[in-house]
Image (spheres, rainbow, N blue to C red):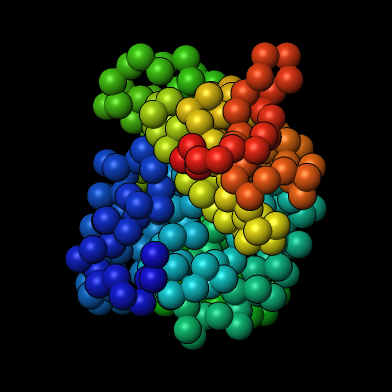
Length: 297
């Protein structure tokens, strides 16, 4: 995807291409982005504020990265704060220091600010968060940072275990539960201050297979070029990798590691094989590589 070529009216298509299996959420996010880039946000406030709820590994962080790519033409225009690093009241001063250090220089050109797993941060950060949401500014250590050119995104896994157990429920029920879990933890008035609250669904197996295929299509070509080989794989390989690298608790997040471990392991002797290589699954062996005259995939 070349974000420079994507007009705002096509943000939805770009988001759905980047974040698989979350079509409804991506439509809402795209609509919010369209208004913000058209200059229809409130003056002096962040361009937009999002709260992304749902299980781990289903696309919340990827959505934030794609927003940075679409709006600022650069994924590096995102500043990420792992809120687990600021769990105690004593760590609030560290957050203030880090925010000023990393966001301060970007306040004029704008950026995406990601508060990742916000529920892990100290409750004492709530006052700072409310000032960002209500007033569009961050104040601390004698400095004030204006956020009017920035996008503020918070992610949370609150209620994740229950949402996994609700896999058979309709999405409207899951949305109500996830929002209530966030309101119970942060208070309703805090959640209500986010302009857009989106709930991300569990990834169905069809989407997991699509993501796995996309990862393989990214992982294999550099190896093919480096070794001068063609590498194909069958559906059993995808099924095996999903079994090893996807679960409801972590979503698709471990999938990249599973590919490197199992596919990379199978290709250790790649230089001994012929020009066309097939990846298949063998009982008791896992994924194996062998010479093949015709490319499978």
